[in-house]
Image (cartoon, rainbow, N blue to C red; front, side, top):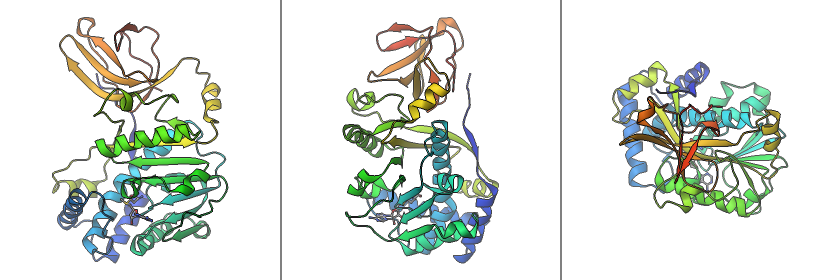
Length: 355
Ligand SMILES: C[S@@+](CC[C@H](N)C(=O)[O-])C[C@H]1O[C@@H](n2cnc3c(N)ncnc32)[C@H](O)[C@@H]1O
């Protein structure tokens, strides 16, 4: 029994903004064949040069980013934004610093929803120009005045008070958080759901905890990450569903990669653990846990990796008790009170409550 949750729509106003922008690059959103060819070329470029910068000076790369990476990263960022909303993560913020902002997908939902000021740090003036024009089609003119694009900032960069730092698919290009990140109040990091990037993000999490940061999500605890300490190959990542717009479906017909679901690794961190208050607001007396794996059918049982602390644990359903629920990776659950503990398994008969 599959319990599908977290299916997100891609906004129609963004489809229109993408279509208009592509025209500036002599490209039509309905030219699915050309766009798919460009996307494959950029995907090969990233695969061959994992540490290289996005080649914004190439028209085909720009068309690929606007029509493919921008909407996909926007959806991921929207899902992380929704998780942040659950914890009132964005309250008290006045400013966003989006590092390696590209076309702005990482900061977009939080920025537009909370009407904050922003500094976008982006080396490429082409990316800056497209980002500005995409935003101008979606937000009020006076809000644009609160945004500033910077090519680069030095180690002495002075972060405005109450700032959220956004790193969406940009840590992968610079490896480490810049030194000015210590001045931030909150952090939102999204990374590709690859083993290398995911495990590096888990290491970043450890360093942040050592520096006194609190992790709001996806972790439900502040202890050591069980996937980092008890495994050399696992990495924490999430998966969401989305309603793919028709124009995107047309492009995908020409691509070997399918994106009916989207994966990513992420981290929401804060200097002040105010999100704890939100938990008591909800009168949640029970412990929380995050589903961190897909279901694993085995002889006589089915298991799913779950995270609630430093132990690497599985929820398990024995086949003899009938149907098992396939809980989506990434969801938050209330820790089940009917579990029978057996080694690293918590054997269940009932479905845990999804929050
Ligand atoms: C993979 S893109 C991600 C763009 C965007 N954040 C997203 O989620 O789609 C990484 C971006 O970081 C920019 N970048 C890389 N190193 C940078 C640096 N040191 N300073 C500013 N921008 C940088 C690149 O030009 C590129 O646009």
